[in-house]
Each structure stands twice: as structure tokens, then as C-alpha cells.
Image (cartoon, rainbow, N blue to C red):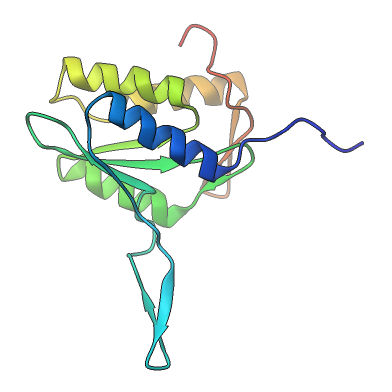
Amino acid sequence: MRDTTKRKRESELLREVIDTLALFTMPAIRINPGGTYRDGRYVKHASEGIPDVLSIVPGPGRLVGIECKVIREYVKPSQWAWLENLDSLGGVALVCVDVISLARDLDRLRADPASSGAAMETYFRKMLSSGQVRLRRERIQIQSIRPAAGG
């Protein structure tokens, strides 16, 4: 039997993420990793794995990279590599599955601008233990966008 529930598209989640960042007075830019043909050659617009949305933490000016994923989408190894690199360089790397958890992380970030994406890592560990996220071949598949109980 086919699943008839309406699933959110990534474009809808992206719009919600940008709107949420605006509520937190954080500028946002949507990164389109596609490319175009110029003089018969394909030219990429951005590097592989770059997060969907980039923003800046007001005050300290730290770069925030947000990768958006909806049900049954994977975080690719190139995306994880980009997020881990951003985190290691002092930026904030987040994977967003819903704007409620994003708002919670932005609240923590606003309260402590020096914090990292560790809150999101904790959130994902809770989702893994609850079965909402499944690791498969070095990728993560989102099973549900409901937050884990108690988190």
C-alpha cells in the first residue's frame, strides 16, 4: 500500500529554515550547488557537499552551515566532510530535519555564541537510539522528522 501522507519537500524546509533564521536576526544565503554551461564547459556554482544554507552568528560573526534533510534523505559523505571541516575551523555545523529543533539549537547558540554543533550531535544520537535515524554505508537516513522524546 502506498504512503498517502504528504511529505515535506526539501524546498519547503529550506524556506522555513531561512524564515527561522530571519526571526533570529541572522542573515541567510541559500547555496545552490548546481552549475551552468559556459562556452561549452560545465562550471559548478559551489564545491561539492557545501551546506544548503549559510548564515552568520550575530556578535562573534561565526559562520553557520545548515544542511537540510527531509524524510528518507541521506547526508552524503561529502556533506559530512564539509560540516566537519566547518566545525573544526570554528564554525557551527548543523543538520536540520525540522525548524523546531533548529530554533532550539539557535537559542542555545544565542545564549552561548562560543558553542558548537555539539547540541545537534546530541540530538542525532537521541534520534539514532530511538530508531528515527538509521546509519547505512556511512550515510544517515532520516526516518522521521518528529523530535525524539525528551529532547
